[in-house]
Length: 237
Image 1: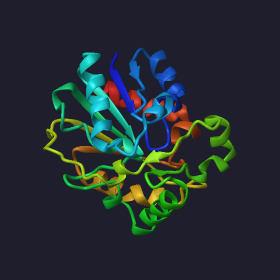
Image 2: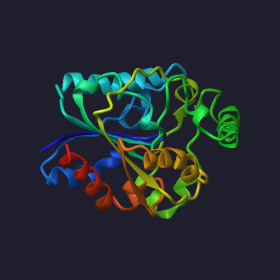
Image 3: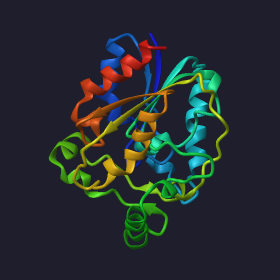
């Protein structure tokens, strides 16, 4: 049995990982799917001051108060921003599912193409009250709409612009990158956005790379496959 903590991406919440978590628990793992401040059941806590650092503290507090050790930390998309260097003694394996892998001083927007950034900034100005990014149109995909049932929420802008402060994570920490190589409606360009991290993982012997013919929300499209990969990471510790 392993302790697996899954950190969701922007617009989502812990709720979207229920099926994957159920599959992993059936394999004997202890699974946590917290919602970051301002998302999911904590959407009412979102403010213009909601920050990347607050989201990092959300996960650190979970590790601390649940007294978790030898953790498989599985991060999706925006969820890859941070944590790994803060409590490395608590972690055994990092798994990035189509996730950002920042370096010290970088923000989400630093890692994103300028066109991607401009699209979100314009949406914040016109439909986001000046401080949050409205939900993109990926619920136009009938699979996503049926799964989400309107539960995706606007994302505070500040976590996308705030630079991360990282110390070195130990080289001994196991790392897996899962790249979803297909785009989906409403999230055009995300596969290419994550490509550099996949290519870095391909070159770096510290990483294992898996490539999925899947949309960025692979946990919606193929939860059994995602659970299998997370289980594989847990059993390799």
